[in-house]
Amino acid sequence: MDVDGGNRHVFNRLSGPAGDSRNQKVCYHWQAGKCNRHPCQFLHSELPRRTSNFNTWGRGGGGRGGGRGGGRGGEVVKKGDKICNYWVQGNCSFGERCKFLHSWSLGDGFSLLTQLEGHKKVVSGIVFPSGSNQLYTGSTDETVRIWDCQSGQCTAVINLGGDVGCMISEGPWVFVGIPNFVKAWNTQNLLELSLSGPVGQVYALAVINDMLFAGTQDGSILVWKFNLTANCFEPAASLKGHSHGVVSLVVGANRLYSGSMDNTIRVWNLETLQCLQTLTEHTSVVMSVLCWDQFLLSCSLDKTVKVWFATESGNLEVTYTHHEENGIVTLCGMHDSQGKPILVCSCNDNTVRLYDLPSFAERGKIFTKQEVRAIQLGPGGIFFTGDGTGQVKVWNWIPEPTSSIQ
Image (cartoon, rainbow, N blue to C red):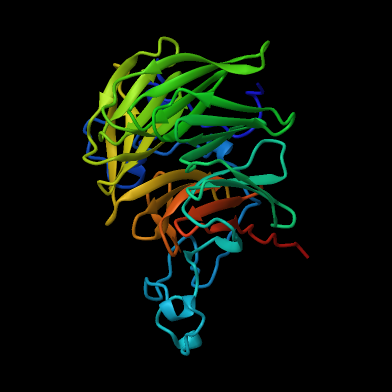
């Protein structure tokens, strides 16, 4: 199994301060004017500018731009904050004079390229396998569709006989979670495997080294190890602890982080597969977890994004909480075209919010007919969103024009 290629779920490692490293980090909350710790273990002064370590989420060319209603310098221009329902139906008579938006987005530096039609129900997974020129999308309409990235045409439809709960890719492999099974496809040698063991729907998947993890409806996390000699995945363990379904998984710093319908996040040691800590600060379902820099980020239907940092003891604690007006469905991290880190948050009010990190300054908004359940980064500043109607939209961070010297 190729574990060196493709995008990873591990970006920079979560680890407690070691040695004198705390003196080399600037306090993010001080930068945002929000630090209330006295004394604070991080610097309240700027370090010389250096390249971000957020590069595994991809970059565009560098710059500024935007769809209709775009502002300058990352600011969101307000032309009402609602999309025109008549424009959506194709019959708004006010045109440019309409006080509502005639655009699927509001903000600076990104635009809609195209949309892919075909799925009949919720798009629950989008992956772009390493070395491939094809996009894979999965849906609760029980199909996976394969799209040619040059033409934008659907080239194949795979009927799975069950709702797709999640999808990930690692190197040439595509993994699909369906009720009671995980499907594994190697896009290079066309090997197809069906892994049994899950009870109920598979909601979340993660891969690290030669191990595959599946979060299931009954609260278990199943583990398989890849046998290179036999060219197959073999059952290795079942992690118990969550009392309800596991709906999100991410790996970082030799840890597995699992978010659950029981409102908790569990931290697992990847070597011993033992639970090290249970995080209980969320008050509703933990829908998504991801690693950014030395932090863990989590979102929940309790309308918050929580930022976790490892203390000197190694335990995680909340260092910042961002509040939304609606429940948050999923998170994705990426760079804009200037290399600035962006957090993308899908909310259950049919919007997707884009924020600069670490400040959480609002960067823009995407509007959808139904809530977005899947967000995936593509190559060259492209990213994808999949919503509840079955529609997949393709977005692009717009490069800044380069000025020529006469």
